[in-house]
Length: 235
Image (tube, rainbow, N blue to C red):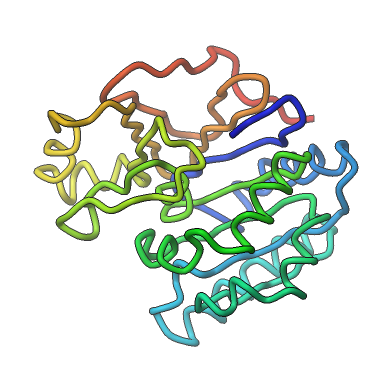
């Protein structure tokens, strides 16, 4: 789905809206602005939609704090149902945003809400027209063709923005917490995709090529996938 006009795309292992990843998020926003988008940071907390109002408020506040540190407008879009993903006002707000960010939670729930909706199409179109797009944890998993069975035992369909990959976020933690499920994902015989493990506080960022950013590593666990030796540059 990427074209010559597409913006940056970030798959983040953990740490959304935290000071330790502020430089990454600020640079993603700057890249969106450089392609004609506004100084607006869109928060989409859908993956946490089943976790209750307190958790949603947590994400709203954390995003607002990051926006204040960056010095940009933040718009929080509580897309919690499929009807919400048809909201014309929110779809309009997405179109000119510099950065659109999906935070963590349940990737399957995220896909159930967004799959084949006008809002998802608007997000893809905005990215193809220069906006930066990021997904952390569940958000990163949802962008792939399949969601591996880490939180749930079975695999599920992703949004297929990147149909050639599958993602394990928090890889340095999940490897210790759920080693059997990680191993099963790596050796799956029917897979024709690359499986990527992204450590906490680490991102894999696509611009002209894929670059790593952050304190951890990105692991190619299955298949072929090329990552530049040069880290993601921060201007």
